[in-house]
Amino acid sequence: MAKVTYVENDGTEHTIEVQNGMSLMEAAVKQGIPGIDGDCGGACACATCMVYVPDEWQGKLAGIETMEESMLDFCERREDNSRL
Image 1 (cartoon, helix red, strand yellow):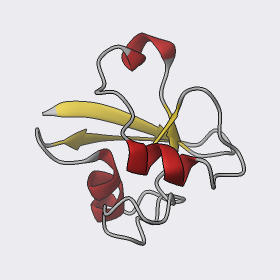
Image 2: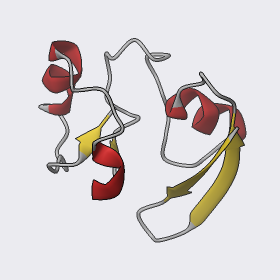
Image 3: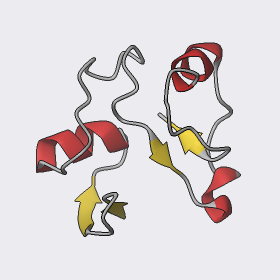
């Protein structure tokens, strides 16, 4: 398991353990992390799970696929390190 810290817009932190293979969105929803709704259930169709990934973790992620890129284009607060 990995420990993941979710940080709300106001700086409130929530650290939880996430099972290997579980998406960060799914873990956040199951733990009731505020601000991550996952309305589409992980189908990459709503962008309510958009997060900012720190630079030191960027190289550990798979590249952005076309569907994710398209959904990120709809996020009003998208940054270079935004991911779904």
